[in-house]
Image (cartoon, rainbow, N blue to C red; front, top):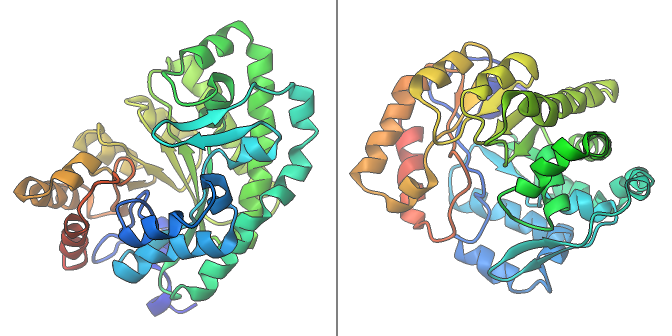
Length: 342
């Protein structure tokens, strides 16, 4: 691959100083796009949609056709792994994900190898997207990080995660084993994605907030390091972005100790803290999705601020969380134009 068609995202992740940062948005394939809503209506349920390679590839490519994103992230869901391990998972309209009772851990462990095969449709989706995507645009694969996935498995859905944290305190050996099972399944899943064409991998630790330092190290950092080690053992060398959303000041500990190529920052990270993290690795983020939805001059000012404070790089422009479903498309277009013209 020549310099001219090496994706900007890969160049940034390699530490290169660029004329402008690469830009992609979390949940850039999703409900803010009318073509996505039309496609989604054709699937019997959300999981069937995610595991239909033709439909998932189409959803992944839709924003790339409409908008000048520098990278595409495969359309899937972080709860495909617990489903592949044998836990009941479904989505209820207006309520989000629901999960059945946490299976016996021995049973979960026995499904690790089979889980990779059950997730093979995601690999086919990636192959389809890579074949259709321009060479100068990167393709990202991902998985939910072990602690975040474990919270759903223990809580039975979205919650304040109090039950999962209590589980970690009262039943530490069981929690550590559950995290280890998820590490092993995630390593296999992410390696499969890399082999199918993903050029970057991302770990979504959506529920890192509120953890004391010792628990953050044990539940977040340690499993992330184990995933990186597992990928290395399998010969997977693509860069990894870690997203410990809500970690606060502990994001610096994460950047110091985990070993990811880039750390994604949430909306609460200060300019100074982001700069300190940027001295350790590439950073990504942290535009507020609510501001993207609101639009106007405040959005323009914030985009300019982010470019000024971190744009000398290496920096990847993104949101601090995913695009909200009711975000006006012209607001997204406006931000992308401001960045690509910078």
